Figure (cartoon, helix red, strand yellow):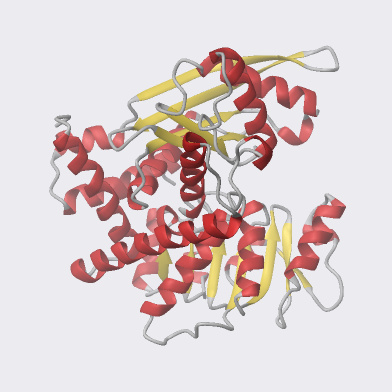
Length: 417
């Protein structure tokens, strides 16, 4: 199976071919402009010292400063971070934001570390990158394994190193130190808006409410979109975390289940009760539902299971959850796939709004911030829908054609090619 990075490059190459950009432009689009690779030696509280690999990949900044999250995960690699940085370039372009794409990672497992150790890793990471990040150059944000507290430590360290606290240097921070209300909900909220806009184009094939939905992933994204979809009148019949999940045909009481999981700090399968059925992640992906939402990790739908998918629509809330080979199978089977660079763009739109507020020192209420997310992501959907209708391509191809085309045009105007 091709790597995550190779999968991403296939999508770029296909869009570049449709747009007839040429080999020279494609070569620039496929490769990052800067790669910062280093090690973080970490004295642990038990007296030992561990060394973690770390990266910050800055892919393309023709539209504006780099933007992208930092993940803490022991299995992270340079290929994964490079692919994610590339996805951020296309996501910010598609959303019409004045940003390029970047991504970072440290091979640390935050579940095995004390708060003091995590703080030390976070501050050390910033010290190594202080010369190449900042509000006008590269603005990090949370990702898998990181959160608002990690961003708070990083923003504080950046302020110490530069001589002043700069709230626009990092996004996804706590509201108390310059974060934006609505930022935590923005990704899941944006996914609900995208699904709503998609249903308007579906010609009545699916109802506007009452859809049966399965969600893989119960982190910030999966949990929020589950709650928002339930509020919108849909029926979440399946949920899963990394250890497995649950299915209930009558629908899951999402707020109750999320609260129970948060209280137990254990896997979802240990708190399933009543008439709900315990299922595996593989079983969840193959459920007969209206909408399937992969909201966990990449490459979960492959050639091995694509033929078993029964959903009418797949909303990619994770980054790269479907391989190109599986994508081709789903297209042949006429299963609509709303791609990650569109479906989960609410998060980076929320980050953009936080950055704008940080620069101006003027902050909006939650409802106003989410209304701005809704407006921007709905407009992005309409632009993609127009490309799809004009060219007769899939949703993913339309999204990449739009995103790659904007970046290529900016490169020409700036004289890069």
